[in-house]
Amino acid sequence: MSTAKGKFKKITTHKLREMKAAGEKIAMLTAYDYSMAKILDGAGIDVLLVGDSASNVMAGNETTVPITLDHMIWHATSVVKGVDRALIVVDVPFGSYQGNSSEALRSSIRIMKESGAHAVKMEGGVEVKESITRVLTAGIPVMGHLGLTPQSIYKFGTYTVRAKDEQEAEKLLEDAKLLEEIGCFSIVLEKIPADLAKRVAEAVDIPIIGIGAGPHVDGQVLVVHDMLGITQDFKPRFLRQYADLNKTISDAVGAYIKDIKAEDFPNTEESY
Image (cartoon, rainbow, N blue to C red):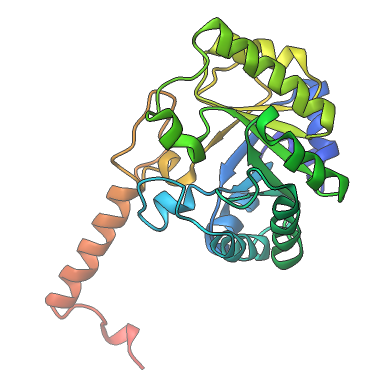
């Protein structure tokens, strides 16, 4: 059981800020369906991200770009049904907010109304300031996302570490301050140097959640399929695999097949 589970009946954006102020780290994972969300919430996870990474791990796409707003709402609705305590954040997918604040607002309202989630997440800094501001003025909590932004993969052309040079690092720091200033309740920093992530976490009062951003931030997030070892072909440096469910599931299915072939399942006790 996490420390936070004992202290808080329900995690809110305000509770996350209190956790940062108290020096208590925030634990965050992705979730895309009811069954997994129920397990993760019961285990005491603080934040569940209905990530557009569902495009990769659930749909088998190469990038997050193809997933649609309707897909994200479907996944989010499933997750909400399995959660009692965790804060649920939903990615606004590519093409649903960039460059058009009205569309950003419509997309975010649909996510909140149709799924019952608690907040949305959008990638980018000053470039999407207008869209984020429009959503915030409607009373919808927004989590920012800086560093490696997967929705922009075709712009970057690579998943390499971002903000290694001073110019990009300074822009990222300024973007983080901007996101705090306009009202974001938290920011995800993805795949940036640990010392830069530390500078950002110390420069703002809102929680900074890292993924490949080192230990000196306010919390960590991983894709649950990667952390549990379900996916086997994605093993970046920042990933710690806590289980090997790929092997566990494969072995279980193999045993099931063997028992059927041997006419051992179902046995007398398993029949009516």
